[in-house]
Image (tube, rainbow, N blue to C red):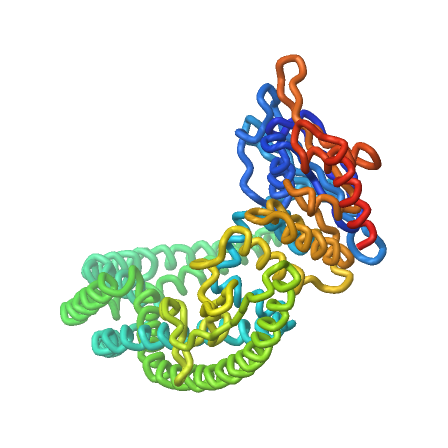
Length: 554
């Protein structure tokens, strides 16, 4: 329930604060006084687009704040939206900063506004289908089907994606096989190019390495007077001296160890030069092998490890061609199961909808009769051809399915005897459409519903006896919902349990709109004004009093 509404610096409203109660609240006032500004302000809280044009001239910000009560415990729910000339607009829910998108979701189900724009929405076949589902309590069934249909669409897209990938892989398969074979024939080892580059460097300088090793060996061991020979002589001298002075035993031991180490070095050099010989054939093989590796690395990767990784990738792609066929087969089986499930759920939903359509048609004719259209006919035929939906639909056997099922409906209406029902958009007048929307709203109303229903210009195109009947229906609807009705007709206004009048005045050269609560004589004066205009006679006041008394008894 909308409990309080505060508006500051919005359009021609300077500051306005009003409390609302349960039941039927009517808002009246002269044309142009600003009644619809209230609706625009509430629409802003429901997520409608806000712009700096809505800010009162001379102000930096406009603020709309609403307090809602919801649930059995009347939990408070405070919503505020601020528009700024700087463009930095803000949304707060219970004091916490949030977004317009989040605000729209949070306020869904709290307020429903019916105006001329909303009336046009009721002419949309998809909206009509949702009205049918809501009336028949089929929303959960539609959501269950919708989830199945979404999976059907996703799985169908997955099959197409797998097929496309398989086609692409098959197109690349021949080249991939050639590339795998080319790499495999080379029998590459990881980091082989590094090892061969080092070996090539040795082979290129084999003669120099051989000669250098021979020279080093001769100096250490091979020649007369070589280093090892001279160390042996030194060792003998120290051994003789060590018998005279034991302190020389340590240097002698070190010298002996050094001589043995140098002998090992000399032997290693001898083995090195004996095997180090120029090998042009081996050098050529290494050069050819490196050339092969470099060609493969230019094609498949910067290193032999990268080439081997590419080979593994290509092998996986070849395996994927075989695996892809199995994956497609499995996904197609899943798709077929979903097609059967979606078709079954769509048939069940359609069956319930057709039963609901008959009940809705009968109920609408009863409601319209109560709204002074006793000869009206209302039917809900189903469009089996579903024209215009093919782009979003999926053909499943004989059924064309979309996110709403297999059905497309159009509400048909006839106001006069002898006329065949036709689409409302083609034949319903403004007054007739207003009453049709009111009847639909009443049928959709749930017991103890929290939603606040706002009717703006529900009286368009009607008057007299018909307006009185509309007022009675609004009062009946207000037993289950909080209802706010903006009206120009006294026949409707007299049924309000609460009455506010919108006044426009000029103060200090500025126009401003206020909202005045009416009761007793002030309410009688307003109803009389609506009946008689500027000059209100005693007879007009008596008529107004009679209307209020009659409405109170009803």
